Structure formats: C-alpha cells, structure tokens
Length: 209
Image (spheres, rainbow, N blue to C red):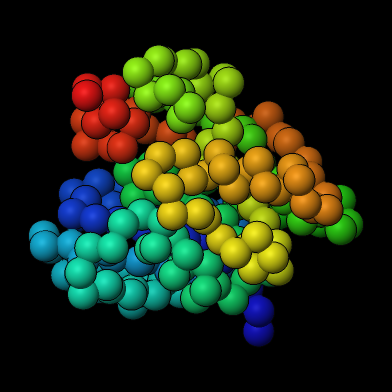
C-alpha cells in the first residue's frame, strides 16, 4: 500500500545528530509514512546507528560508496520515494510531533495541491549567506527552507529534482516550482525545527569564508 509521505533524509558523518531526526520521526502522531536515509559515504558509525531504527519503523537505509554531495544524495532519495507526497528532513533538524499530521490535514483539505511549504521554528542564527552573493548575509525570513517542502513525486520528476549547484539548490527548486503549473500553498504552522547552532552546515561554512 502506498504511504502518504516519503521522508528523505540525506546525511554525511552526522551520526551523533541523526538520532535526533530519527527520534522525531518515530514520535510523529501521523504514522502513514516511510523514510529513506541516504548515507552519502559516511566514514563514521552512521550505518550502525541507523540499523536499529530500520527494525522499529518503515525506515530504509541506502549508502553511497563514496561521497557524491548533497544534491546527488537528495535526488537518489527522490528516486526511492514511494509516497504520495515527498518531504525532506535534514539530518541535523527535527519535526514537532504533529508536523506530518498538520501537513496531511492541509493536503487532504486542498484537493489537487502539488506543493506545500513554510512553517518553521529556527533555533540559532537567523542569518544565512545570500545565494546570489555569499559574502552578504540575509535574514531567513527572506528565504524558503527546503525541509518544509511537501511535493508530489510527479512534480519532482517533471523538474528533474534538485540541480547540481553548490549552494541554494532548494531555493532553485522552489523558483522552478513557481515557474511550473504546480498548485502551491504556504502554511505558517511552525512545526519544522531548523537547527542552526551546528558549525558544520553548508551555510555556516560559507559564512566563515
């Protein structure tokens, strides 16, 4: 039976943080989901850490033999997805317990909706590098957060997934969604928890260059 959601989690050497994301998934009040963990060639104990979760829920583990980058890992996840809607959970982030339930309600109440986004709680820095000028900092209120995206697999296939660019692939995807015939809606329910305290994220690394 087709799950309602496919949750894509890409990760690279973040075993210590990934448990937080997976625990948040297991706490979801909405249970009609599958998850695909795409391990982009981690050299830490990610595989051993994920294995017990695959026995608790419909969580699948896929490993790249070599590190190929975030975009490749994300697009591999899109290809593995079986759900009616695809969504993203960054390996250093988490969901409020009602996150998937709240989004399912919106999607069911708005027939034909193919792209839903928005609704984030930010912990840590509120500023990120501008994708058009990484030497300039912009407030996250000016940005879209890829982890909040919910979209049909058909839309992902139509747009050929994320583009292989070094920074801002989620914003680029959003721009292409706007240019497509997608039926789009925004929510302000802040149930995606975006952690910005860690110093090994792409945005932090760019900020320090």
